[in-house]
Length: 492
Ligand code: GLY
Ligand code: MN
Ligand code: MN
Image (cartoon, protein in one colour):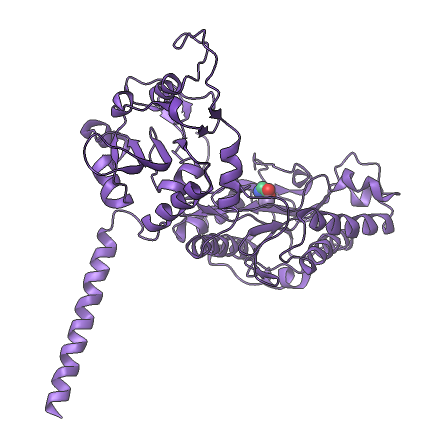
């Protein structure tokens, strides 16, 4: 008995100590630990290699740093293809993936090599830590990682490859004092691969080499990125859950007189509270007829009117993966009869598409299914006369992949297991429409996220209330923000 007690005591003591230690590690952790694993990225590179034609090489560049104004840049965001294949989240880097093993002057043969930003104490004091080649080797699992400046000296004869795959360059890279920034890496690549550009830095009379291929990589990446792995699904589901939580909190907190910005802020505060690092796209919060602007991101209306609807299309980005969810709700908590008719029409259209949401269904059929329901409803309510007029009030597509991009790379032929897509029908009736005035200014979009399963779908965003009753019910609940009242600020 005595013995059992002391074992139990020691076990409890150990458990407590473990909890204290893991808590301490959590507090000292420099960054979240649930990013994609290095094994994921290595496996994705291998999958790409398997698709590549014999004797080829694929070349990827990091996203450029983009200037916001003067000496301030936008927050850096990695190119999603580059991130998918590497996990590297810094600028000024180039990745080469070879179909076959390459001979190294010394050391083992290799089939991939990455050049990254050099460590630099001064730069890191200003703009943050860098992994450098050693960090890339240790944390991201690359065996061949070098400073960017090495790329110009790297002996590679691109003419020997059957194909050199790369994405066409965006023309917004700037040249910094740094001699191995993205500008220089691209310049070196152009010279090495004989892909001349007539500008003041590369003046060449030569024709581009004919093994250069700027279109195929997109197809390869669409095939890979369109089908999500388990690791990706975990992160994507978290992005969706967080975005739903934002919708729920706004439904409780919304009051007439708030500004569109303030409502946007509540969503985005919830995202950050759950440690989402970014937004997948600029938030769309449009009250009344502002909702008719499909990608309205000004969110500038100072006071929303109780009699209007508000359309809110937002997605948290969690470890690179973004949700894409839209809810449209009555600002005073109750749909009026016209709002309810339009809302339920859009909801029925979405439900109709959901009935055919399974492997084998062509993407296009989802759109057609939503258009049919909406056209019929608009005709019954005298808003349009003929089915073909539906595009006037439902002018966009209904479905797209989501993932590292909100409009993610993916094949748009038929639905397949482990794709993640949106279904997002909408009706938008601008103020100047030639319809009964009671319909004018109504804008409704309902957008949900779905994982395609073996025989159907999983409705990932179902925790955000969606029916008229669910929305009206939740809007009667109190909010933690009801007491968050700030003093009025007056101009002097
Ligand atoms: N949020 C952009 C879209 O719905 O496609
Ligand atoms: Mn969408
Ligand atoms: Mn959206």
